[in-house]
Image 1 (cartoon, helix red, strand yellow):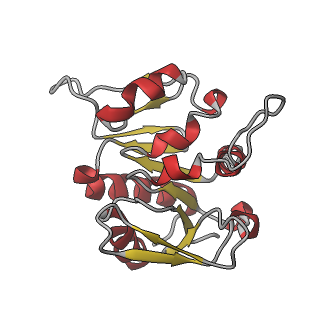
Image 2 (spheres, one colour; image 1 turned 135 degrees about the horizontal axis):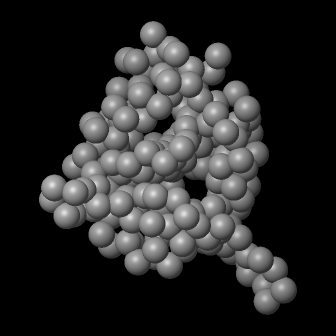
Length: 198
């Protein structure tokens, strides 16, 4: 039974989310580990959007065993946009970012709960086949990117606004850091549904 949640992170992450994940999930029986594309370094330090807090990461994507994981969260803010960057692109290549390739592997794991919040669905957009037909919510800023990648946006019936949180299979999406507690509660419910951690 896995109790590990990987959190994919880069610079310009949302400052509210990292400490919330580190506090909430361990208190509920799950271990949190930050991972990233270290781009050949042994470790990297990432600053949040406000440049007031940082997270040091020493686990590269190649060192992550998704078969031993319960969940993967793509942190919000602009971190997933940073992870879409490729140093070298070619006219002949697919140019899919390494982190999107990692996400593609994650999406193939039926029992891996994957969570996104705010702008995090940006990492899906280089691989629209991963989003095609999925029902999601996200930040208003990227709603057209997400639609253009083939996803269906979900709206709250009472407010007519984008839903705060939505579950589509193993994918849990959230609209904004303002709803982080609801996102974490929903993500936890999906984990416990599969892994039955008391």
